[in-house]
Image (cartoon, rainbow, N blue to C red; front, side, top):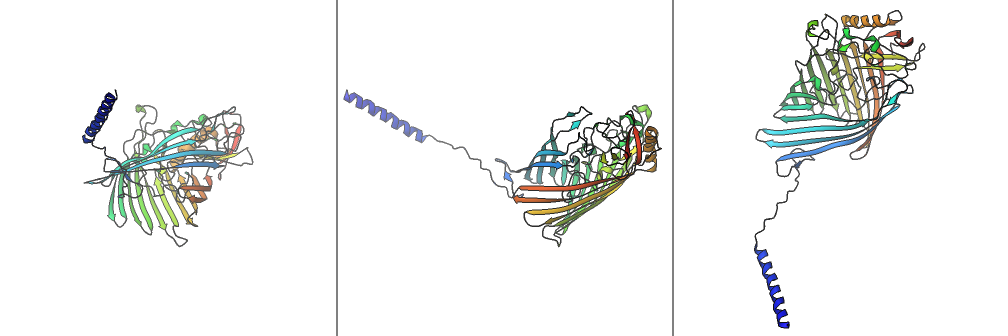
Length: 498
């Protein structure tokens, strides 16, 4: 038995040894390891996508905001019928909050015809809710919103897709920070669909030409009012326009004021034609921009047989200047711009600015007074032609670096809007018919200004705390008092200065 056991064990060992020798002789191909490599061709943060010649960079930010006593900077006073900001009654939010995440993706691919670039910027926000309706009012829950600010392809000088307008200054609407409601220049920071070409002439000099779709702005086109559609009794509920009411008696029912008729755009027939020349050098930047804007109305009535006004082209010009490294300190900057528009008001009161709004103040004859403003590209009435609206504005900001951790800035903007005499006659004819003229003077022109200061503390890299304080003033040209119907003798003062 011992002999048998020895033979069996020896056989097993031999089998194991032979099996091991055969496995070692088999050919084995190891799987290639795909390492992520740094791409230094286009700056920091780019990496090669494994297995390709395309470089990619991921970026973005997280932001948390709180606005105290700001009349809701995200909606700006009475810019929407669901808001009571500025009324200072018990149905107004005294603070507003926002949480936001931004994600952007940038790719570059070198080809025999040049670099092909794609870029997308996606925004995810959650904002404070608001009070809606009369007492008993309801409180709406906060809302989540999505935004696509940029989504474009660049190749051989062409830009195709969605991004900021070439009409804009590089700082858009923020010459030194500040709120979204600074007038005095254009702002397409949320993007506009376009087809553009930029030529580089060397030494920092470029020229650009673009076709842009104004109906793809974040808040659509500006107003084009048909005054025949004015509804006085709808003013309190938000369907009409030139009216004001006492916030106390109205129990917080929100108003949409300054809407002088129905918005009467037809379908788009021509894109905006935009051009810009820019000089960008070590001392700073200078840019001159022009834009042409087609006002294509619908019908005088609701059907084709009622007829329509002819199209009219509006236009705008803007100059921008940035001076860097001024004597006040290293990294300091001064940004300035000025704009004039005729039939293209959103190049001044930009896309994040409410196109009709109100501001409350005190009154010696009523519970409150209210000022209101309506912004439009044009106005027309039954059987008439478009009367374009003219505006001008200026904007500026100065930024000072105290040290690598602290930065302060001051900024401001001022703009004026004027209706033609014919447009005023149309608007004020409706005003007098609805409210009388015995105690009130109608004039829809207005001026609006903003000044502010801010300080930014950056304790560590990629973390910043900002405190911003701004003050706004509406100088409207209405004055006197009016009674709102069908409410029982509600009186409120229309102040020229609000």
